[in-house]
Length: 357
Image (cartoon, rainbow, N blue to C red; front, side, top):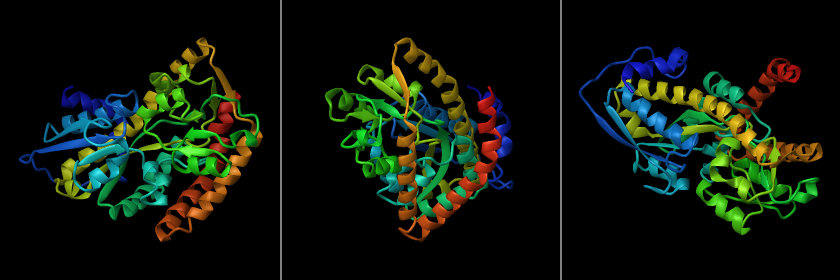
């Protein structure tokens, strides 16, 4: 695609980048950079994998090939759960993944992916871009030699695939479920057994009984993995991931070596893909959901008492991890304050409107 067409696809998103970058940029047309992008997704996997490809292509085209980004899918250059360290150490200049995979680095990482019963996609973007979320994210990742940017969002996810019905909280007892991040911590405290698996491992694990249940993303991606072939019940809502942000992480030295105009192009590209991915999921999830309905998949809402118990547990865990260290406390305080403040508006705007149609 020609550069002018890429600019057209950005539309109004170009005007929205000012919170991230300076208006005064310098141009250096001489230097060229060949970058590697490693991801936690299978190559060209719908939504997540194609989002990484779109980001790489947008950076390459907008820079007129001054930054040429080559994408490596999960396991092509590095395992999916080693993207963070690989980029941090300079093995690749840029990565595309989810921050909740890095809870072992810092509990605070999870706030920049998704928090159970937390912000939805629209609210998450508002916190990141206009609620000092990105500034706090940069502060956290600075010690890991990384520059973070939001670069995608799936929207509210599904609750997952199960091979037994969940009628009450006690049904979670002993349940082996693939569920990462804070959602896994909540499940554990509810009596379940959280398992961390890369996406490519989920189907076989569920098929062979290594796990009893799994969450992945939503109908669009779950259909692509064929999860409906190895599980009986599809639950909603995705209490554990109401608005998961997908991250672009950039090696700090690589980013700072760029002239200002190329830094601007990276920031614009991340913001454009952040918007584009959410739109893609919103459009495609409903088509895949219709497919599941045509296949007579049993789609079930979690019982209210189960959701209520999980929310209580989630709130307790968040308060506990907020005491881990000063940066986690600072991020927790910012996130929760923004959630409480924005909920007043969401309740009388989006939530109220949805109930009318």
